[in-house]
Image (tube, rainbow over all chains, first blue to last red; front, side):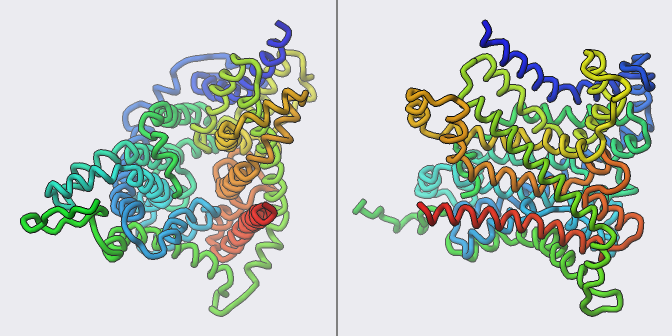
Length: 265
Length: 294
C-alpha cells in the first residue's frame, strides 16, 4: 500500500501541471464575470459563446478562412510532395541526400526571419493580406512534413507488386495509380493531417503576411487576448483544440510503423 | 533467375523503378524544389544579405551594431531563457522517460504514459493563452495554492516574466523530447539493466549510468529541435511577457511592425541563426568525438 502513495501523489501533481492550465482555459470560456480577487468566476454562462458565434461575427469568417487556407495548403503541399516523394524514394537522383537535407532545413533553423523576409517579398508582389499569400507561407512548413512522410510512404511500398503489374503489361502510370498510390495512401493521409494541423495552428507566418486582411483563428485569438478579452480568446482556443486533439487520436491508424521507421532514410 | 522471358510480343518492360534515369527523377522533384527555393532559400539569403547592406547600398556592419546596442539585453535574455528551458526540458524528460522504462508500479506507468503526451497536441498559441491566465497573479495556479493554504495571499505574485516563458516552453516541449527519449530507451537491450539490478543497483543509478549514456544522442537531437522552436515562436513571448527585456523573436516583430526596419530585424535574425548553429556544431563535435572513441 505504502509504495502506491508516492506514485499517486506524483501522478496527481503531474496531472495538475498538465491539465491545470487547460482547466483555467475552459473556465474562462464559460465565465461571464471574473474579477480579481475572486478565485473562481462569479457568473457562469454561454453569453460569450453566443456573442462569438452570432451571425456576421468575426469568428465564422475566421473559421472559414482558416479551414479554406488549411485545405488549400494541404492540396498544394501534397501535390508537390507526391512526385517529389516518389522520386526521392524510388528513382536514381544525383545528390539525393543533399535534396533531402534541403527539405529539412526550414525546420532546422529559426523560421521567424524567413517569414519576415517572405512578407517583404510578398509585399512587392501584392500578395500580402491575401489568402494566396497565406497559403504559400503555410506551405513552407507543410512541404517539409509532406515530402518527408511521402518519401517514407513510397519507400515502404512493396516493389514486387509493382514489378508484377509491369510484367503483366501495365504501363508506368497505370501501375503508379493502381498499385503504388493505394499502398502509399495511409502515409499520404497522415502527411495531410500534419500539414492541415500545422496550417490551422500557424501564427507567425500569418501574422507577418496575412494581417490585417486575413484573420485566421490564431490571429483572432491573439487579438482577443491582447485586447484583454479573455473569454473570446478562451473560446477560440478551445475551437483550435478540437482538430488538434481529434486528429491526433486517429493519426496512429494512418502512420504505421513500417512508414515511421523509414522517415529520414 | 537464368531464364529470360520472351519479350518479343510485350513492350519492353523495364524492371522497377517505374521510370528510368535521373532525368525523370529530377523532373519530378523540380516543382517541390522550386517551391523550397522561392519560399525558403531566397528569403534566407535575403535575410542574411540585408543584414549587411546599407541604405544607400554597400557593405556595412551598422545594422549589427544597432541591433546589439538596442537589443543586446534581449539577446542575453533569450539565451538565458533558452538555456533554462532546455535544462528543465532535459531533466523532466529524462525523469519521465526513465520512469516509463524502469517504473515498478504498472498503473502509475500507464497513467503517466497517457498524461504526458497532451501538450504535444496543443498549439503554441493556445499554450501561450493558457499560460497567460494560469500563471497570472490571480490565475488558477495561485488561486489553488492559496485555497490549499500553501501560499499566503499577500505574497502571491505573477509568474508572467522569464519564469512564465521557461515554464511555457518546457510545458510544450517536454512531451516531444520525452516521446523521442522513451522510444530510444525502450529499444535498449534490457539485459544490462537487469544485471545491474541483480547486483543491487538502484533504479535511479540504472537510469543515470546505463540508460542515459545510450540515449544521449537522441536527447541532444530533441533539445536542439526544441531550441529551434524556442527561437522561432513569436506568440508565446508576446502573450506571456509585457515589456523589456523579452525574446529576440518579439523584438524582431516589434522592429518590423512598428518601424518597418527590416535591416535591424535581419541582424537580430542573424543572432538567432548563430545561436542554433553553435548548438548544432556542439552536437556534431560531440557525436564525432563519440564515434572516434569507439
